[in-house]
Image 1 (cartoon, rainbow, N blue to C red):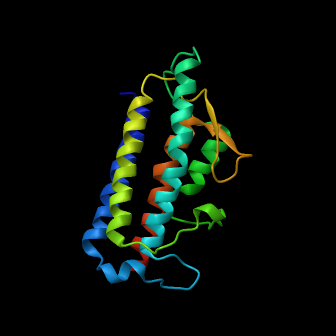
Image 2: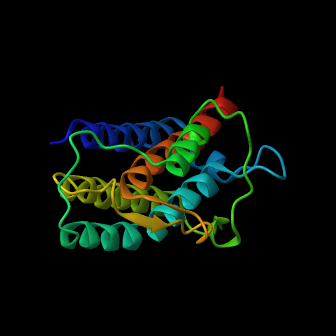
Length: 179
């Protein structure tokens, strides 16, 4: 397994562990509690992460198909492109800057917390499997459009590395509120 991809998989695994820790330590009734009117509840944060993963998965799959057909060799070291690096850098905790999310990614928390958790686990499994599939492919030479703003394009390695960072951002925010 390519070391940079293994790092992405480790980050997905780590996000899953953090989410499960929230599930195991935070009572169910607190999952729907908004601490402030303009902040999301834990359930809404997990729902947002699920919406994000659901939007990215088909784009990542198409990118992998393109990488397979491209004829390019895989790089010895995967690199994020400039936009991908900037997004990756701005996503991680600690959160220093808030971003307004696009309307399709604004969560609803009308489902049970257990449903959000099981969907997150299923999507993480899919994302990890996809990252494993990317091994040996030129994923830093194939670009995809962001589902948040289709004018923004970054390489597939950037997209794969941004996703767990985005997850850690939201999980960190919830952990800070609970402290």
